[in-house]
Each structure stands twice: as structure tokens, then as C-alpha cells.
Image 1 (cartoon, rainbow, N blue to C red):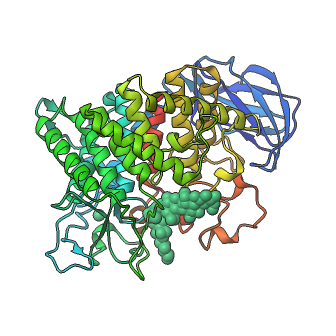
Image 2 (image 1 turned 180 degrees about the vertical axis):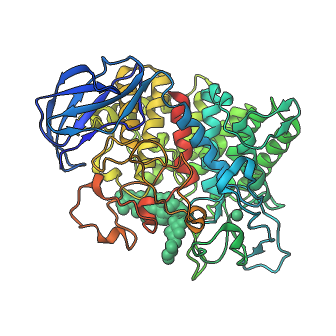
Length: 543
Ligand code: G3I
Ligand code: 9MR
Ligand code: ZN
């Protein structure tokens, strides 16, 4: 079938605008809502690329910048409609932020703020400390991780970090209002984004033990069936502490301290105190304490093979917050361990994407963001600046190898490929802040275009955004209630790994961009998580 792929939400008036064709029209037109032709362009043939597997042409219509609703016509095919506007992504940003509210655990969601997604308080019973004979602990609160009801310390810290670094780099995020219950600081109401993030920070504080260490996760022993959260009454377990969780929490609390101190002094002091306590524990326990699921338990493992990037992040974040040289020295030590572990050659002075990585596992890139915020002239800052530029250059080269101008290669189409893309878009956002370049902006635009429909599935990977947005996320509450999902949720996206039963029905030689199905049970393709939405918030704040 002939398709014209576009960003189904739309384009900022000033940005580059392109449509992608899976056929070879010689020209194309842009028509407005009344059917008037406002632009005629010629299409450029790209050829077949390895990520889409399709013979691609594309057309540029950047010249069209009058606000309005449009479509692209070429031969007998037409695109979905889209908007051109100055503030095209304002609603998307509100929706992306509100997703965290809908995922709140512990408290119920009230009808005033949640509407049809209202539910009773959930997961409020005390959690059993797995394998220990000690009293059960109240760790209620925070956000459900994803389509499941687990709450995981490393995943939660990283999601909060994406948002809070966004606040530091792009304070305009503090103005975004998305209709959540009000929360007071000591200087009046908190900005919505800080009120929402405080919910998760309060939970993460409960995950810290008296000795400063942090439980890796709290979940039922196995994933719940597809029931409402309040119907999930199975026993909750706190699974063992890890240095991964402890370091991530030290880092994110230090980062949060530097923001909340201007809004909520007592809360900020508490965060700092807890960050130091976690760091003390790390110092007393220098060997990695990694994590493995208990025998027979199937909830998220979030395993990591080492804790150097986590300790690097903690050291950088505390250094940024407090300025004590000791933390800087610690960061240098962890950098050495990371390079040694990875075997990355520093001879050309480039370390792959090690110091630009912001995932749930590799977090040295988050430490790099703290160094960039500190704005000091030192060895580590010079290193991470150079790495951001080199990684952005590599991404620019990737963008030339496919017809979508997308900065991804076939190896990026793994579980959560949309986050691989969003992480790259974060790198480009930061690189563009360090040294503005049109090609970085164009790549960010192409990334957003891809997520919002300019892809070979012709689908928007964000619920409710665009005419043909996916509708069946692997998400328990909406499925159990028989509701369409709320808007703003980022799907995991195409994954060549074919790691669930639905995905396994996709033929093995399918092109990476096509390894996707909008199916509620396809958890390796179509789940949602807090840390797939949080990098979207960062990227939109940057735009
Ligand atoms: O790192 C390797 C890479 O070297 C290799 O080339 C590639 C090809 O297979 O795989 C990469 O590893 C993948 C890993 O994620 C790193 O991103 C694994 O295949 C993949 O199975 C693994 O998926 C993770 C998944 O849990 C299973 O562990 C996802 O990243 C992670 O987001 C997801 O997290 C789940 C939680 O467990 C539970 N809650 C929902 C959440 C989202 O689905
Ligand atoms: O629903 C679970 C999802 O959140 C996880 O990402 C995924 C991998 O841990 O597991 C899903 O749960 C499935 C379980 O692992 C196996 N049985 C089917 C479950 C989904 O209904
Ligand atoms: Zn809950």
C-alpha cells in the first residue's frame, strides 16, 4: 500500500518539515483544511534503508509556516492530517507530564483530576522484607513503574532524574500546568512538575533503610493479572538492597535538593541528609552489591553487571550540589573503573556513549549532566563535553543512512527502542545547548516526527496524539477498566528481539522498524513505563 508518513500531531512553524513516501512520486502537494493547494514540491528518492526495509522517497515542505491544518497528497495517496503552529507540542507536554499522576500508587486517584481513570487507594499494606525476620515496612506511595504494579528504585530514580535535569536545564518546564492536586512548599504552591515528582521522591525515601542502603524494589512475588491496582491484594515484598539503588538514590536526592531548596526547605534538607546517608553506606561498602531476582519471582529485575556508572553519577551529583572536592576525586576513580570494565579505548579520547547514557542501567550520562551544570573547567567536564559532541556527530551520521533522517541504526531496535531514540534526542538536546547546530535540531525534529507517526507503521507511538495513535498499551488499569488509554503515554516500540508470545508471531526477517504490533499483551513491544515518558518531558522542555 502507498503511504505518506508524517508527524500526525504536527510541526512547529519554524522547524524543518518533511514527509516520507514508501513509493516514488515525482512531486507532492500540501493542501489546507479547505483542500486548497498551498505548496508544491518535488520528492527525492532515497532508496531502501535497512531500518525500514522500504524503498523510500521524501519531500521537504519547510517553507509552509502559516498556522493551520494540512495534509500531503502524492499520486493517489494522502497523509493523515497535521497541524503547523508555533506551540504545536504544548498539549503533548501536558499529557506527557500527567501520565505520572495517573500512575500514582498508594493513594487513590480522585474523579476531579483523574476523571474516568479514577481508582481507589492501592498497594497500601506493609511490605515483607524478603528473607529477613524483621517487621514489615510501610513503603506505600510513588508511581507504578509501568504496565505492571511494581515499584523499582533504580527505574524510579532515573525517571525522576530525567525530569529534574530538564527543570535545571530548561526552567520553562516549571510553568507547565497539568491539572493535578495542589501541593504546598514553604513558599507557597509548588509548580505542578515539582508537586508530581515529590510523590516519587517521598516513596524513594521510604525505600531507604536505617543504615542508608536502599531496597532494589517492592513488588508482589509475581506480576498481578490484568486487574485494577486496588484489586491486587497479594503480599508485597521488599527485595534486597543493591548498591545500584543506593547510588541512584544518593544521586537523585542530591539533584532534587538543589531544586527543592528554593521551594520547600525542610523537604530539601531531608533529601540532602538522605543523599549523604546513602553515600556513606556506599563508602563503607565499596564492593558492588548487585541484584538478582529471588528464585521463582518474575517481576522486573533491572539487573546491572556493575555499579560504576551509578557510583559515578552519585559522586558527580553530590559534587554539583555541595562542591566538596572529595566527590570529584571519587568520580574520577569511578570513571577509571568504568573505562577499565568496558574496555573502551580512550586513545582517541572518545568512550562510545558511556558518558552520554541515561538509561535505567547505564547512568554515567546523568553524572555528566551534573558536571555540565557545575560549569567548572576540569578534566571530567572537558571529557564529557567532548563525548557529547562526538556522540552527537555519530548520531548525525546515522541520520544520513536512512530515508527518515532518523538517528537510529538497526541495533537500536531493542525492547524500549523508543527510549533508545529519546535518549539520543536528549543527547542532541544537550549537545545543541553546548553548541547550537541546525543539524542537531533537524535530528530532534525527525525523532519527534518518527514517534508521532512518520515511521513505516504509520502509527503514533504516543497515546491520544495523532489520528492513528496506538490504542492498546500493555497497561493493567485501563485494560481492566475496559477504557481507552489516557493520552501522552510513550509505547516501548518496535523490538527485533521478539520477546513475548505476540511478538513471536512476527516473521523473523522483518525490518526493525516493522517489528511492532499494537497489542495489549505484547509487553516487549507495547508496554509503557515512567522512564520512557520522562525523556520525552526532557526533550519537549528543550524544544
Ligand atoms: O544490552 C543488550 C544489547 O547489548 C543487545 O544488543 C540487545 C539485543 O538483544 O539487548 C540488550 O539488552 C536488552 C536490555 O533490555 C537492555 O536494554 C535485553 O535484550 C532486553 O530484554 C532488556 O529489556 C528490558 C526488559 O525489562 C526485560 O528485562 C527493558 O530494557 C526494560 O525496560 C524492561 O523493564 C520492564 C520491567 O522489567 C518491569 N516493568 C515494566 C518494564 C518495561 O517493560
Ligand atoms: O506485565 C508484565 C510486564 O509489566 C513486564 O514488563 C513483563 C516482563 O517482566 O512481564 C509481564 O508479565 C508477564 C509475565 O512476565 C509472564 N506472564 C504474562 C505476563 C503478562 O500478562
Ligand atoms: Zn498501587
